[in-house]
Each structure stands twice: as C-alpha cells, then as structure tokens.
Length: 389
Ligand code: ATP
Ligand code: MG
Ligand code: MG
Image (cartoon, rainbow, N blue to C red; front, side):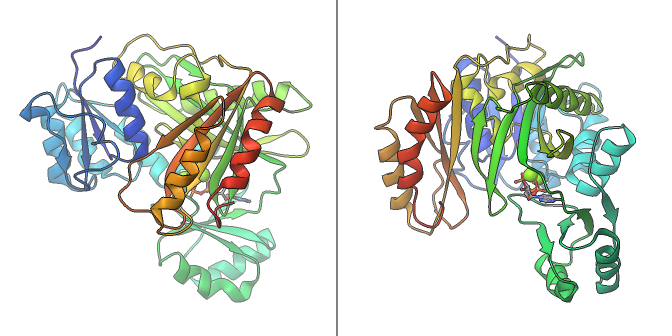
C-alpha cells in the first residue's frame, strides 16, 4: 500500500488503534513513548531492529529526533508534544510532519487556539485572556458572572485543566488547583447538548467529515457517544459538519481532527475545542463507519485516497470504560459482561495499571435502530464498575 514508515509521538490507546489500522494496511509504524510496553507498542512488533519502538518521552528533543531519523512521516497521537523540535525537524528538506507543527502549536495552547478560531470567523463562545492571580479572577467574575470556567491554556485533558469558579472566594483555590499554569477564562456555556464531528483532511487540502455525534461527559470525561446525532431539526447535524470542516480548513497539514462543539437551545453552535489527531468521540467509526478515523488518518498522512466517512449501520453508541479504582478485575469483569451482548465490540487498551478516572477501554454497540442500540446498552450501563457510572 505504502512503503513509507510512519512515526508516532505518543503510544497510548489512540496509537494502539492507529497501529491496528496500520497492520491491516501493512504500513510500518514506530512509536515513541515512555512505557516500553505502552498500549500502542503491544500491537506491532518491529519488522527490523531499525524499526524498533523508542522508549522515551514525546517531549524529549533527542528522542523525537531519533524517531524522525528512522521514519518517513511523523504524526502525533497527543498534542502536548515539543513543537519547537518538530519545527526544527520540518526545516530539514524532505521531512514530512502531519499535521504541521504550526497546527499542533496553535492547538496545544487553548487560548491561542480560541483566538485563531475567532480570527477565522469560526463560532466560539466568549473567552478572556487573564493573569493567574486573584484580582484577575475577580474581574472575570464581574465581567462573565458566575459560574464561569477557568481553564489551563496548556496540557489539558479529560477536564484536568478546568476549574468551575462558582464563587469569587474560590479564586485562590482555583489557581492552586490548576497548578499555577498559564490560564484563561471562558464564559459559562449553558449548552443543551455536546456534539462532535471528526474531520479528515488530505495532503491536498480535501476535507471530509464524519456524521455529527452526541457526546455525553461525566466529571469532564467523555462517557458516552451516540451516532448519529438525533435532533428535531435535521439541519443541525449538517451545520455542525460544515462548521467543523470550515474550522479544520483553517489549519495546515493532513490527518484527522476532532471538533468538539456545544449545541445551544436556539440551535446555534459554538466550537469548544479541536484535537489535531484521532479522538475519543471517533472511536465508534471503527465498527460503525465505512472507514475508521484511524485508517483515514493513515490514508491522509500517506497521501492515499481518503476513505468514505459514511455510517454503515443505522445506529451506534460508544461507552468509555473508565477505571473506578486500582482494581483491574473490575475492568476485565465488565468486559466479560460486554462480550455477551450482540452488536457489542470490546476494546481493552492493555494498560498495566488501573486508576480511578483512567481510560481503560471502550465498548461500541451497533444496531439496526436507536432503540436496539439503547436496549443493548442498558445492561452495560448497569454493569459498569461502581463509581464510574
Ligand atoms: P478533552 O479530554 O476533551 O481534551 P479538556 O480537558 O480539554 O477535555 P474541555 O473540553 O475544555 O476539557 O472541557 C471538558 C468539558 O467541560 C466539556 O466537554 C464540557 O462538558 C465542559 N465545559 C468546557 N468548557 C465549558 C464552558 N465554557 N461552559 C460550560 N461547560 C464547559
Ligand atoms: Mg482538550
Ligand atoms: Mg474537550
């Protein structure tokens, strides 16, 4: 299919599913991650010593250079990487990095990402650049009212950079909870639903979007995804796709992007944030779409024809398996319940340790109707490890 070798910064569950797609296409893939047995590295064994995975951090310049030296194309499964080194590597003739380091750099700072989207007329809700001090937080409360959302500009995931300020007396607590990182503030968005669209962009700039989906978060972590999005106004799904496509067109480079959005009561849509990589809200595409987000990411960065993003089932749901404690047996017992259900595909990520709040796997349920999917899902929701329901 392609004799190009793909190198990936990061080797978690997204890399694991990317590796599974690479194996089907017979594409060589090499991962850089600290864990020598990380989820992605478990999937492919190197075909030659030269293509061995690298043990090290995806923010370590030397390790990133070592990865670059053995592959033809670099990509990321996480945005929190060292983009200065990626820019340096890209300046060497022949080096190929997707999406482009400038895209990852813009997106990895959520304030710069929001400013970028706003300057390209993409719909975003009100936000404010603030200093990490009590006075600044008090001024924000006066401007935005309470509650408002305080967010870390960098290194955020699973809501671990967010603090809901409900009372100005919480200002100091908020700053220390966010670890004195650079911050910005967002006005509280009273959304009726959260929605998401995966978009794939080719090396020639062609974009294709997957169907809009509904995402349900619990404690700031994605809990459930329903595909396709159902709403009284069918135009909402189409509008969400076109907003997501337009946003992705403002960035450089190929690959898939996850566009998280808020749907408001009046039908308007705001972009919450964009991920420059495969995304949790696109896991369902493995079983439910003609081409998965992982395969399309590979096709895009390898300059192969993009695959169809259409659903091939009537309805699908994805349920994350989040650790409830350090007890791994809870996860495996739950997975054993899932495989008893028709239309249910279990994905376990092969993580060596279970922790409360850690993504340990997911389950995709497909069916011929929403009601069939919901009835297949019901016993799974009841069987979830306690604490993660
Ligand atoms: P991810 O794991 O998706 O990268 P993250 O840590 O980057 O998450 P956000 O996506 O910014 O965090 O926020 C997590 C969740 O918090 C959102 O999905 C939404 O439920 C809620 N949220 C975020 N911003 C706001 C806001 N301005 N108003 C209300 N709720 C919000
Ligand atoms: Mg995020
Ligand atoms: Mg998010």
